Image (cartoon, rainbow, N blue to C red; front, side, top):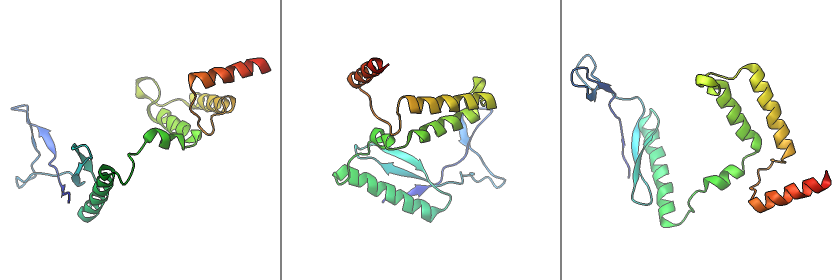
Length: 156
């Protein structure tokens, strides 16, 4: 069973330049609000995961995550394939993530896009989704892309 723990807030000591725990008025270390836990991965590695502010919820979540990793290690569950999982999402989801990024920090110097730029990019996205028939997402190999291009050139 994995354990959950709190980690101290670290600050840089001006005199020594080292990272030291932040202290409260009584001299006790100040801890982060969220609990953390050590998750042991199938190939013998481990990682620290940030959980919730409630210790019991954090312990349950960590136990569930550890059980998933144990199932993967024992072969009961296949290793998750992020690529195939992403292919099952509609293309609009990818574009919405892209637009959300642009709305917050997509421009120069991490500034948001202007309203005109956002409108233009949305129009281009609609055009390319329709033009390339990207819904659902399909994986193109060099051969299939070339065949599709040849077929299109013959039609036009």
